[in-house]
Image 1 (cartoon, helix red, strand yellow):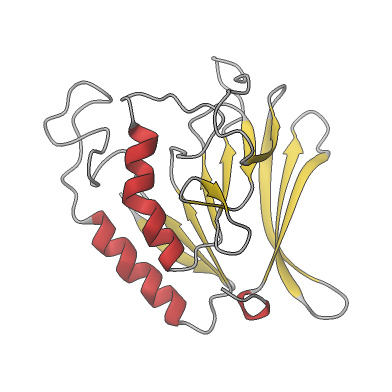
Image 2: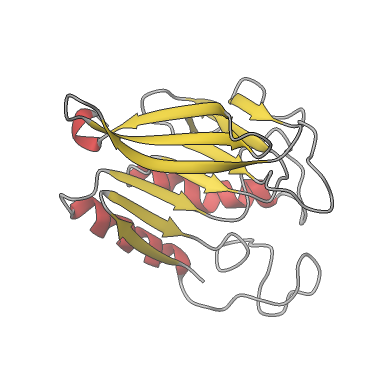
Length: 204
């Protein structure tokens, strides 16, 4: 239900946003809010150990964590109620403590990228970028922008479908960066781009 892997200088971590954290949407005997589930182990202890190990490696230049649900989005409502708050309480401090660079998720059927956020506030130095990339298309269509987290959303796409592209890019001067792009499905055009320098180039 949760795992990690290294791809070049990037450490990827997949977390479970549905179970096995305090006040999670599903538990072994939950029937309202998503169905029975959970009881797979101590996810948070595993996550702390995994991130500590990744940070101890000199090969790790970026850490990207991915899960299904967002906890920062213009659409703040979710079911079960207060799930975004419970997600933030469970995971945000762990991700910050271990220097996670980006959180990727879906669930909301649009594209949004936040500014760097920590504890519900803009923090350009210590914050984490949250990317909601749920606009690949489904029978419910693309969602409209919500009214929450004003001032924290950097950009978004709420019409048409699209997909994300994550790559390490080395410039002519030899500097390698992590590049995120969001492309429209209709013509492949890039409508959003984020560049993150390598850890050795940053001060945390």
